[in-house]
Image 1 (tube, helix red, strand yellow):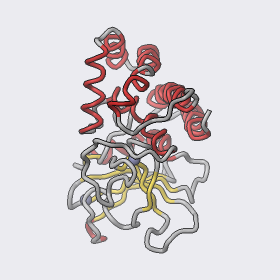
Image 2: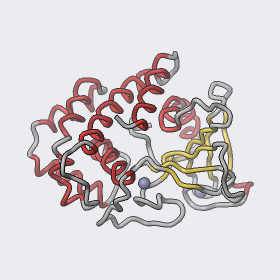
Image 3: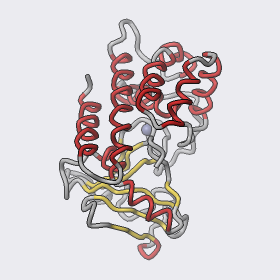
Image 4: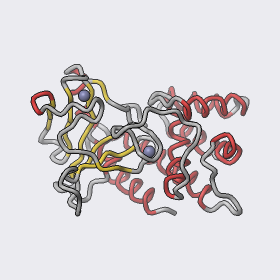
Length: 262
Ligand SMILES: [Zn+2]
Ligand SMILES: [Zn+2]
């Protein structure tokens, strides 16, 4: 089992046990992560197979893992997703494939099943340095240099780094790897004027803040690992779901919804 998934699962289990407004989300996310870890592991341990990066070619292998995800969501998901999973379990495989290709070519953070299934696949592509092909995405410094995905969150960590980035990284919502990014810049539109960039912080989440932009009205959350080294950005981002409420109430739109739809 990859260390990456273990770490996410352990943190989700831990935070789900803390009393907070996001207990249900984290309990579900912990189960999703288990399904994703199993899918990832099935790619990694598959004999005589390595991914091509072309979803059309890799589709039979990717689709063969879909039932792991669907069965987990049917069992542990919130009612509406669970019934959707139940339906998809009996749907024509061709329709399942069409959904995956739609997402591959034009990702959307509301296509839950395609995103949840392709995260471990593209993460495995990233780990094996197999560039994805046939994805016509925007590119540029505000999207993932590996797969073109949008940022899910930003995080600060103490590390040897160039002065320019100030140790800020963005984490990709699709392949879950990260890249260095300048510190005081909107991750959505590139706004650099400090007066246009706002931060919201609540004492309840000492190491997490909303990073919002008044030019494009987008936001994401920043996780500060120099304040809490135990934090796991992807999971702590969900833990701090109450902060999203504040952002929405103030008219900001999230750059990319997280997997549990917050
Ligand atoms: Zn990526
Ligand atoms: Zn902006």
